[in-house]
Length: 167
Image (cartoon, rainbow, N blue to C red; front, side, top):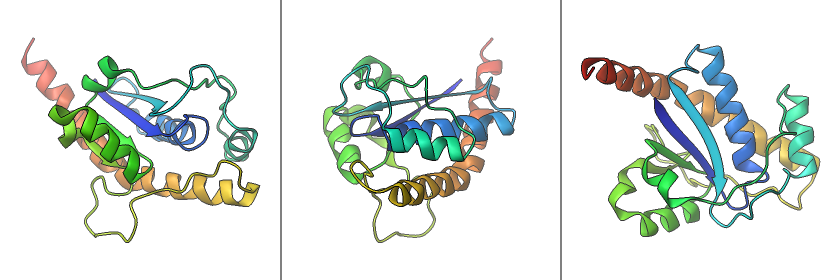
């Protein structure tokens, strides 16, 4: 199974939205048995609900964040993850310093599987911002998740095929 973590700061806005979007896309591609998606925050406190505006924007897009609770980064989980997608460059750099042996699995969402260099690899934090700002961030995350879905599908199928060969 391809294990993916979506990472932001507190795990109450960007990464829960990213997790929900990617899970939906994975399900639509019938990849759920091959891909596991989770999220956490590099400086999160366990157990917090998503921000009200994150829940509202997710609802507007037919996604439910009501059961999500924030979770702090757990080193044992991160080390055994195939792909780590960070919302900001600062998250990526922090994780690469903490886990240098897996730095080749840590990317910002905007740089992963990217053919063109971007001006910024950070998706802005919407905490404390307006509903329209949250909507813009949701769309940005959704666009990036749709862009990387073919690569995720390829990696998941490749990993599944490799797993079959070893049994």
